[in-house]
Length: 193
Image (tube, rainbow, N blue to C red):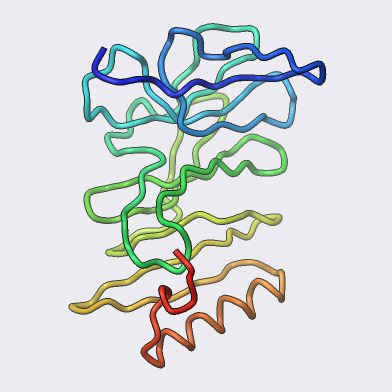
């Protein structure tokens, strides 16, 4: 094999661990769906050629065959760019809606990273939530509001925090960072990467 796959394991309260995806492939990130029976994860089959984009998969904890929820998406699910973003750019999080019917993930398309909403059941469906020439980092979801950071580039590096969350503390922190960056400070000055 051309790579060493990352494993996805479940550990019970007695400390017994078992591999969920077995010899199927690799998993970069995972989360339980609200039903407690299925797991959403970002990964790819073991026999995929090097450079194959990752997809979002759903697997029952007792099944060895995951279902791909982004098979028609030609871009890399869970991708991120290196950079001086105010929030770590290599973020392979999966954030679920309260009912578990939708997953929110980052999708790398060339030099941009957008956030997509992906249906976790039924007909395969994925919709971009953010678009444009920017790099978004998915942070959280509260109710129907996403919280994410945005890095915009217009000839020179320009940093901006774009907040979509009701939490006043998080909003104020993001506004502080944005104002400091506008004054000429970088996120490195605050040890934020």
